[in-house]
Image (cartoon, rainbow, N blue to C red):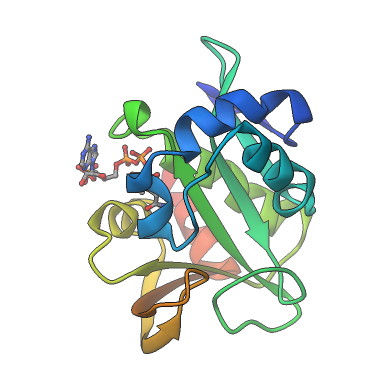
Length: 182
Ligand SMILES: CC(C)(COP(=O)(O)OP(=O)(O)OC[C@H]1O[C@@H](n2cnc3c(N)ncnc32)[C@H](O)[C@@H]1OP(=O)(O)O)[C@@H](O)C(=O)NCCC(=O)NCCS
């Protein structure tokens, strides 16, 4: 998939160094609920396992051809957070700190939503963030998701208890957004 500034493509083993550079930052993983990468081998292992799942994409900056973040579509039978039915999915994302605030993730989310509704023919797409993650909340809002519910007691993949807010977009919501843009 391609956007104005990004290419979304599957992760490659040769991305391990770039992945480590950004995913070793404790300000990225902890707020999203996963452990910061400890070394390049750890990043390689993540590429071979977690990132090998279907619909997980490296966010590659066209200007530099470097992978600078990750995003993906998660289903009820893969690693996910929202309670979902068969025709639903959840999207997740992060981007390296030097690239925060440029609207790059909302740009990627738009491409993921097109993939979810137009190609995968899903009925509902979920997005969630832990309490206090204002930056991710803004991505949900700016992407057109509607707040749905809060789960006050979820165990994060790091093992701690957190409050998680969930947003969702239906196919009708998506069509209305698309129509407004035309
Ligand atoms: C959340 C995240 C993906 C946003 O990506 P992004 O491409 O920077 O998104 P945007 O440029 O649209 O910025 C979103 C909000 O972040 C905030 N923000 C932007 N740059 C920032 C910076 N340098 N420092 C702190 N906050 C910043 C702003 O509130 C912005 O909202 P606004 O456009 O209304 O001002 C990114 O900050 C990130 O990877 N954070 C760590 C991991 C994470 O939280 N992942 C999501 C888990 S649910």
